[in-house]
Amino acid sequence: MTTRPLGLALLTFLALVPTSAPITARAASLAPVVGALQWTQTGTSGVITGDYQSTEEATDSELGISPVGSLRFGFLSTLGGITPDPENGVASVSPLILNPDPRSGFTHTNGSKTTSTPFVAQAGDQLILYFNYVSTDGLDYRDYAWARLVDSATNATAAWLFLAQSGNAPDGDGTSDYVHDKVLKLQTDEILADQDQDAVLNDGQPVIGMPMGALSVWAPLGESADACWAKDPTTSSCGATAWVKSDYTLPDGGTYFLELGIMNWGDEQYQSALAFDFEGLASENLGPGITVYDNTDVPEPHAAGALVSGIGALVVLARRRRMQPVR
Image: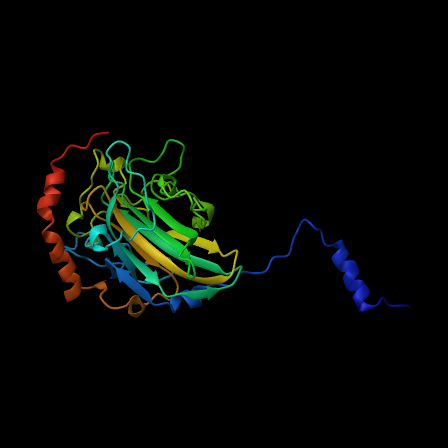
């Protein structure tokens, strides 16, 4: 009996493999890398426990444990955010330059962001983050949040990882006014190559409306908690999207950093906030000056300061509450 050489047998086997089923390399998770990053805050950012109660009566809402199993996670808020002042060298924290609303003339105002230190990634690496957008605004006041992967060498957007926008009821076509790439469609900067959201959200399942619409009393919303700017709160964007998974596989290797942010639109009232989490996130990595809402009856001292600073806005907030929203 004769035997075929091993090399010839291998070639024969490979020849029988269908060409329509390419072999792909398994993506390496960036979780250990991202979990070790340090973060720099601009505006209001911090950590909060998912069952934190910000009222003495314990009547406010909770986000619970995040999808990665953590009781503590990060947040950003428009409350106390940075207001652009170009004459004094204060730029907007948003990377987007958006067209003013065609009816009201409104555009974005104050906001907050957090930016990571740079990290090296390889083509095929997988980046998974989780976000929960919470808003008390709507109608013409289209607050928005974003998360993007940025090329460290050029500061150009390498990928849009998450986008959310306050609005009104979901669109009639079954899509959502809240978590989508419509924010990018309003850009005035036409030289940006990427006008779409790049990450896969919720494994391809659409995020429609605000399924947790009752959630509008949350500590990072400050003085506007339990408010809703809309004629009909049941069809507005007030509330939370619930946790949304953002899954992105890098097509190219390089050195990148992450940027997460939140913006007010039209005014600096009726706040919005963005909760975020990922494997390895630790409060000590978020840097100095963060606000901490711990699982106690009252905020820690530096968190209490953020709440007190919002009280002065109550008079201005009341002025807008007396306004009648028009469609």
